[in-house]
Every structure is written in structure tokens, then in C-alpha cells.
Amino acid sequence: MPSTVNRASSFGSTKRSLVIKSGSSIKRHTSFRSMSRDKKETDERLTLDILQSLSPFEDGKDKVTEAARTLLLNCLKMEPHVHDVFFPEALKDHRIDPRDLRGFPLKKLATALVAQAISGIKNDQKFYGTIDRSELDSVLNDVYDSLHWKKLGFSLYTKLYPEEVRDAKTNISLTDYIEDDGHNWAERLLATIMDPRWTLLRMQHIIRGLETEEEYNREMNALFVKLHLLDPQSVIPAYQFLLNQKALPAVNLELATRNYLGGPLNPACIEKDVAAALLKTSMPMNVSRLSLNDIEVFSGVEVDEFIVTECRNIGVWNGTRPNNIHKSKVTDRCCVM
Image (cartoon, rainbow, N blue to C red):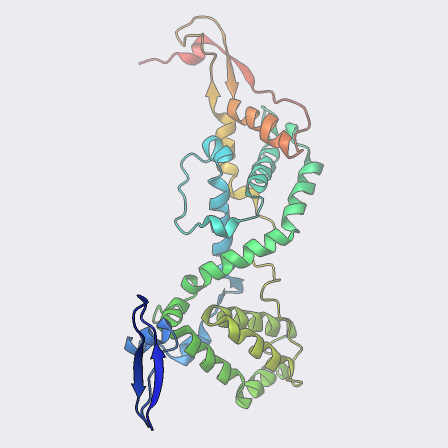
């Protein structure tokens, strides 16, 4: 017998009856995502084997971590208080999103890293002597050991992973799988992990010494990252399954607690720019270069100002001043044409 459902008009007019005949059904899409998936053709290049082979590790190094550190360095160079003085030619990386940096002491680290570079450049100007190395080490350790460092690392790592990790032969990236149907690929990858043959293979690798427990955990964390990017809800089932495999080493879920940025940044990567700023000379405004008298020339004036303001603000200026004034003789300013 037909059933009747009363439906009210959105304009508040008379109710109308919707008659549903017996045996009939109403097809309903649960989400816009499923609707688009029905219409979208599957990328035939994508295979489960390629998905499994995608790895951030290359020649023993994590290339995504390296990319994240490079992006962070660009962020530091773009901080206004250091950009204009030390890195005027640096251009902003288009992948930078302010939301990724939220809560991170970017200005503090930018100042400390430049101060670290200054303290390592030994020259007659003695700018290096203006930095309190003990206090500087304390400031840097506070940043590198903080939760903010790990949170930023996870944010940048997961941001860059989909495009940085590619198959060498086909150039297929994780982004291709995410855009194809990340949820479906996560389910297929999870099913592979739960296959007894997969467990047996991992166990054989460990028994034969082809993989240490540390390497196993590193690979499993890489797997968790991959699953997280495909479908975050697939991570916990994968972790719980692996945790229950007594034949395999105990697995640690370090998805959001691992240090994805690695150790401290190397000040040597900005030393050339900082050294150039130290050597930049300037003359008093009221003195002409055509003067026949000796003229006082100042080196690194902007750096000196940076030290007594920004470095002092984070407590790494020791109160001394550099020896950045020298006499310029007329013979130094003249040249034979």
C-alpha cells in the first residue's frame, strides 16, 4: 500500500503530499565526494604497488625533512627585521602558509640564527664579540627542544610530502592518489598490511638482519604518514593491527610526536649573506667623497643596529660594540682612469 509523506513548501504555502509507491526506492548520495567519485574516471596509472613503494627516504636521508627545513629557512629569511638587512634578494616561497606557522616563534629563531652566524664570522670588525654565546645557546635550545618545533615540523612535513614523494619511473606522487580517491586507496593499503603474507615478509626481513627494529619503526611511521594523508581515520586501525602482531617488533605511533625537522639549523647556510651585510660600508651624510681629508667609514651599520635592538630583545647581546669604524684616506677613494 502506498505510503504518504507530508512535505511543507519552503515558502510556507499549502502542504503537499509525496506518494511513494510500494517496492520503489530512493537513491541517495551520502556526500558530494561520492557524487564526484561516481563521475570521475579512475587514473589507470595508479597501482597499489606504486603506492606501497612511495617513500620519503633516499640514500639514507629523508628528502621531505630536507625540503621542510629549506622551506623553514625561507620563512626565516622573509621575516622583515632580518630580510631587509641580511637577505634583501630572497623571494618568498609560494608554498608558505601563515597558518602553518601559527604559534611558532619565527621572529625569535630568525634573530637567533643570524646572531649565531654573526658570532661565527671572525674579522677585524669584531662583530662576533658582541654576541653572548652562552645565552644564545640557551635561546636556540629552547626553540629546538620545544613542542612548537615538533608541531611545525609535522605541519610542514605533511604539507610537502604529497608532492615531494614521487615514483622515480612514472613521476606519480602521493597527491595523485589523494585526488583520485584517497579513502579507497587507504582501505586497499590497509588490507595489504593485514594480509598474513605481509607480516611474514616483514618478519623474514628482521630475522635475516635486513631490517633493524629502529628501521622497522621508521618505515612504519612513514606508513602512518602516508595513511594519514590518504585518510586520517585509517591510521588507528593500522596501528592497532601492527601492535597486536607479536611476531613483529613493538611499533610506536610517532605520527605527531616525531621530530620531522631534525636537529638545529646550520648557520653556515646564511653565513655568506650575513658576511656581506657586515662588510657593507657607509659614510657620514655631511661628508663628500671628494673631500681631501681622511673620512670615517662605518661598516655594518645596519647590523650594529640589529644587534643592539633585536639581539638585545632576546637577551643575546653582551653590551659591547664592534670595531666597525676605519679611516678612509683620499688615496683609497681615488682611482686612475
